[in-house]
Length: 281
Image (tube, rainbow, N blue to C red):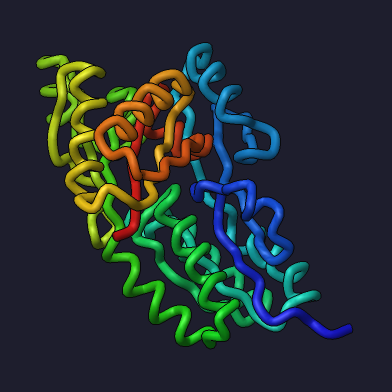
């Protein structure tokens, strides 16, 4: 049997569009979510809606973990049966050990995989995969694809309004001082994925209304020509997401806006009520 040239691999922190779900060469390997002794596979036996409900009823805070090198290896061996090689684009190595575990799994499986650190998460990963597939269709080599995508990582713009400050703190993504001050002053941070793949608080707001306008203003500043595409990721608040979309289109009528859910893995840290806008320049 003739093998296909390239498989595209990511993890479940990525936003998986319907087009990617139906793409024959696309594979997403899920992370794990732990509630005490109970383990769930992201997107397989735990949906975002179920996660939010579990968090409300849980006696202890959930945790996330990447698949082991051995688990990645098992997946890669199956993919290798049908492909000559793969390109894997994972969540930022500064935020998760997923990339490292995946690379170790490739060594075990003996499957040639070209790895790219997205320096991002959610749509930040998705945009790279979509561009990479486009380059492949245009005849670019794997080396050329890797070079282009690694240049592209620095052009991501993103602004994230955190829904649950306590979850961000308990998940180890902010310091105790930041949490104390935020709780004391009743403010919520606007955070950003930096160009080197870290999460950084860049501003703060005191109300959801101000948060929505803040995100709209940043989108408008980033699209002076009045056109472009923005991904709006939401954490179990579809009504607020639709409201935010309407506000953006009112201010930038020529914009294309796609709304998507943050994955369960990300929801563990960001929490219900999170809204994020992301785009590549």
